[in-house]
Length: 213
Image (cartoon, rainbow, N blue to C red):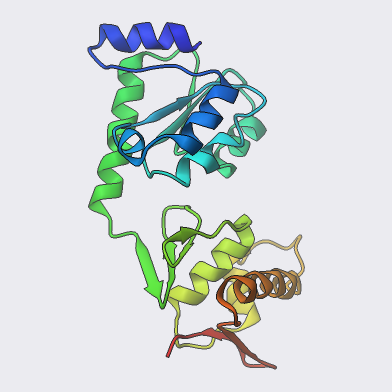
C-alpha cells in the first residue's frame, strides 16, 4: 500500500514517504522534533501494529491521523477510532479525499479552543488523552471522560448519578450505576501516582469534586 499511495500523492504534488509498520514505530519515537512537526498528516494502513501506532503519533504531534480500512464492519471501524485515529476511510479512496479530510481536521483543531485546565491538568474536548504538566496522561475511555467531567465542573460537587449520566447516558439500562465507583477509584490511584496526591475529594452521599488551590 505504501508505495502505491506515495506515487498517488506525488501525482497530486504532495511529497510523502512510506514505512513498514516496524520501521514507522521506530521512526516516530526517535525522529527529531523538527521532522515530526513537518508532517501535516499520517495515513495508516492495516496491519498488526495499526492499533498501537496512533498513540505513538499522538505522543509527538497533534497532526491528523487517518486510517485506511478494507474491513466493512462497524466493530473494526470503532476499534480504529478507540485507538486514537481522527478519521477512517474505505478502500478505494482517492488521495484528494484524504487530503481534504486531513485539511478539515486541521481546521477544526485550529478553530476550537478545545481544552480546559485545572492546575497542571489539561483535558481536551476532542477525545485526546489528557495532559499533566505537558505530558500525555493515557487513560481508558471511561476514566478519561470522568476526569473531563470533573475538570469541566471544577469546584462544584457532582453526584455519582450525574457522572453516570454524563458517561453512560440516561438511557443505558444495561450498566449498573455503581460501576462509576470502580472507574473513579482507578482514576484516583493513577492521579495520585502521577501527582503525588489525590486531587479528587469525595464525600459520602454528596459526591465528588476536583479543585486546585
